Length: 422
Image (tube, rainbow, N blue to C red; front, side, top):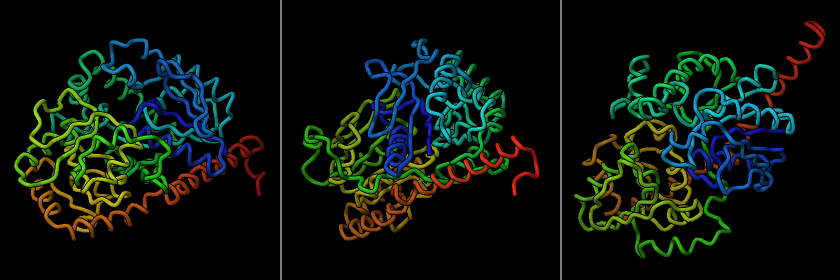
């Protein structure tokens, strides 16, 4: 089967969503499929390359030329409306690749919709965030969980998140394009039940199938030289947090909890600094910055336990699965898709978000009890098998198969008229 992935970012840009697109593309190639990826151009990176059998096209967009809109040049996010330059580039790629399936992963989808109007190629959209319902993709409003969308409310929220000019444009185009997106997509693939509900798929009776993110069957194996990174880790066991060092991810909650602990291992933080990253760190907290994925996996292997104290409703939480695959128990917030992953009391602990006292107690309980930590780590490793590529990718293949069969029947009926097929 010929598959075209649409993703605004791809390696070397690293994040949970980017990692998923790369892993899925590579796994599909291993399983005999023909896969191409269309993604945004990155300065200094080849416009075309082959990544372990995956053809990667890096295309230029009009919004990238407005660099003043973005704080990070390598993360010029696609807006929720068609970009004429991207539409034209995708047209050329589709003509060359002749895909049987187009699988979108974010708002770059909007630039394919004009082509979809003239094509019978099935369109799949994975939902890694709440972007179908929320203009800032997080379902947060004024620092708390959002109770639901509203025109004025969303305008205010987007302006506060993106800035007045960009925020108003994003909110308005998102509202105008939403009905078009819902009509164009043949099936949505939310990564968790929370993602399906948060995006309104259930209440609006849109076609969807929940398919989680996954880790490779051999998540700890790497050919990369990561000694320069792992040599910086503490020699003894340590607690590990991986992700953006932001308030959404609960970093400030974690630091409050850790500051009140006595006689516990060091706390290691791996991730990007954000504008709201705390400036002062408690004693025994080690900030590592961004690491390549292979080094992160080795960091999980050497750690005592994983910490995912998010205060925003995570749609999934791939870092939790990666830690569990390395046999590490996870202490996480009882929020969003994390509740689909962690079995409270068996593979770790689920605690109330933004509760530093509960987080401190959970950390203390696991650091003080080696037997419990080992038992939960073993349970976490077993649980992670449900999220291996060999378990998840066939579910995606089955969606592709069903859609292409339906498309073939529809095309035959349109060509010959009803009553021709047996």
